[in-house]
Length: 162
Image (cartoon, rainbow, N blue to C red; front, side, top):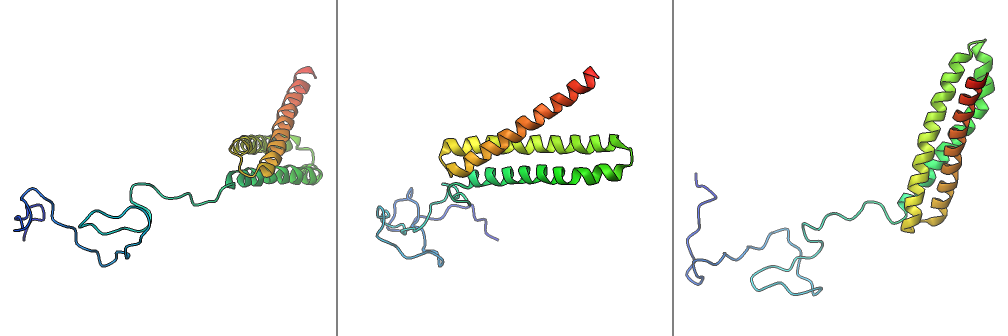
């Protein structure tokens, strides 16, 4: 077996310190006239060069769209809880402690989603990506976050005062 790390003997037309000319890959694309020409002895490479990273998978404005979708999920969660609250309370049969736990979980989840929509909306608006959707996300996320905070504070004050 030969070791691929062994130095190659110098060819007759090249000085001993020169690198051998690269061979053409069978998968290489034909040379194009775009950009600077390749140095002599090197093939012209078309397309992105290695080392520059990959282009983002999503198009511009996806952050505003993401913030808007999170805001819609937040609003839908709040609406669903409001619609189901009478059904949940009627099914408790006097076990209101369980309703309070369900309400607290919904509030924490709503706060997390609202703050996420608010932050992503602000970032998207500052970047200028889909400012209308980002503005809607800021409004819905901000209202949800403030509503949950004031709801938790009012429940805390009600528990302390009474």
